[in-house]
Length: 175
View 1 (cartoon, one colour):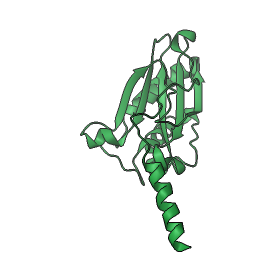
View 2 (cartoon, rainbow, N blue to C red):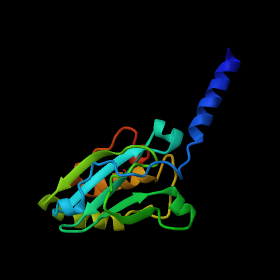
View 3 (cartoon, rainbow, N blue to C red):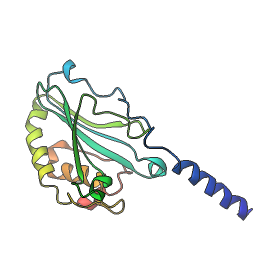
């Protein structure tokens, strides 16, 4: 019996670790409004299950900002591979679709603020991003990681009233 339990665990873990991040979906999830469809300023926070077996325990969050009348969103997230390459942990890019799948995992919208309130919050959020203290560090556990980054933004800009899921492992590192 013990032998078969070990075999099942090995097979299960093996199946989960053979996910190919290169071929995993990064398609838009259809949650975000296209910039041309809404001229208002937008602040949105997303989270999706982390890649592969890590998704059983943790999420990867990110935030998207669209200035009023902007043609694209600016997305901000923290990734470990950036630090491993000697780059900033904060990855920023422009896109029409900030709600893309996180390597096969469909995101959920954690928070959406649009209009005048977003206009007022965007400079505060950008200032918090610029002050992120762990820009050259990354650790899956206990942090700092992607959850630490998003939690840091929430702590620095309490008007967001951002609530992260229980599976935002590393969010407590920001306290």
